[in-house]
Structure formats: structure tokens, C-alpha cells
Image 1: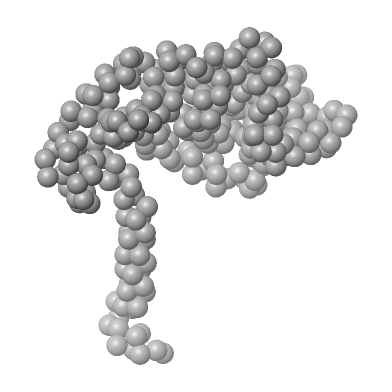
Image 2: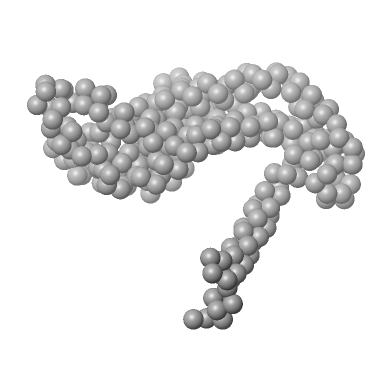
Length: 292
């Protein structure tokens, strides 16, 4: 028996595990603060007066609180910033719906249907995960230009309905493999078609992975800057990310307070989605690829 347990009263837990737990929590809190410091400083900067922003004051507590930056940012451009929020919401929502539907259908085909060359097509699908986005950028741009889709939202939305994101397909394939095939066989004996098996059995049992794919798809689409930058030139079609870039002036007259204020607002949808759907997100990631 060790000294730590020898001096412990009956029914009392040893002090060393509690000490280690306290140190671990302190270290995690310190690391979290370091990671969150830029966001906290951006929030504090959005509440500071313009002349106090770069005055050498690194404190997270503003000496004087003002909300003028939010007013300037919301109405500072030619179009109200609410228009850009609406644009991003429409694009992200439609792209998320397309991603979830197309990826789930493709995953159902790879896991439940039999067709010639399935293994080859699955390997090719996984191979697209290793292709950088910039490799296919020029051919895609030429294709969308010939179709007349440039300077529209179509290049950002319509491809999602053709299962172009192999990550989500692979994620759902791993989850679908954990659903017993006996359910499909029983449904087929009752006269269910593959479509009814997909809609009545697979989708209801796959809510965690569907929610995970939807959350990631929405966040990635909302935060996408490069895609809208390439395909959109009309200010009225700008997303939030392109609108934030509009505050940066190469002549040096950048309105940093307004930029920080609108950047803070642009993070709110992401935080809300993670706050309300974190249980489904964690469950979807934790159960993917596991037999239940």
C-alpha cells in the first residue's frame, strides 16, 4: 500500500488523482484561452472606439464601450449587410440539402446495391479525396463559363446534388455498414423496393450521421471564400465572406472596427449550429464505422 493511500481515511479518495485532474483542467483552460484569445480580442476590438483600436492597448476589456462599429459595418457598404447574410444562408442551406441527399444515395448504392464495377467506382471515389481543389478548378470554371453559370450561385449549389464530396459519401458508407442487412432482407420479403428501404429504414436509422454531414456541409459552405471569389463578381450576389473582404481597402483606409464587428456577427450562425446540434454531431462521429 502506497503512502498516498495509507494516510487516506476510509471512504476518502486519494489526493493524487484529484491533483492530477486539477492540473489537467488548468492546462486545458490555459490552452483554450490561448486559442480563443484572437476571437476575444476581435470581439473587444469591435466594441472599442476607432482611435483606441491600435493604440497599444492589448486588454480584452475596452476602456470605452461603443456599438458604432456594428452600425457602420451593417450599413457601411453599398448594400445592407443583411443582404449578404441572406445570400450566404440561401447558398449554405441549398448546398447542405444537396450534399446530404446525394451523399446518402451514393452511400446506399455502395453498401446495399449490387452493380458491375462497384469496387472500382468506390476506389475512384476515394481517390478524389486526394485531389486538391485547385487541380479541378480550371476545368470546372471553363465548364461553368460555357454553361453561362459564372456570376451566379449555380456553381456553388448545383454540383452538390451530384455527390461531389467524397468525404461525406465515405462517412455515410461507414455508418451504413453498421446497420444490419437483415433489416433489408426482411423489408424485401415484405415487398419493399430499394427506394422504400432507403427512405423507410436507412434514413431513419442514420439520423446522427446525416446531422453530422449537414452540420459540416453548412459550416464549410458558410465559411467558403475561394469559391464565391472565383465565380461571383456582382456585389448583390456576394456572400458574407466576400462582403468582409470589401472592408479591406488597399489604400490604407480600412475600417477595422466595422470589419471586426461584422466578423463577430458572421460567427454567430456557426456557434448556434454547434450549440444546438453538438449532441448529434458527436454521436454521428462516435458511431461511424461501429457495429451496433
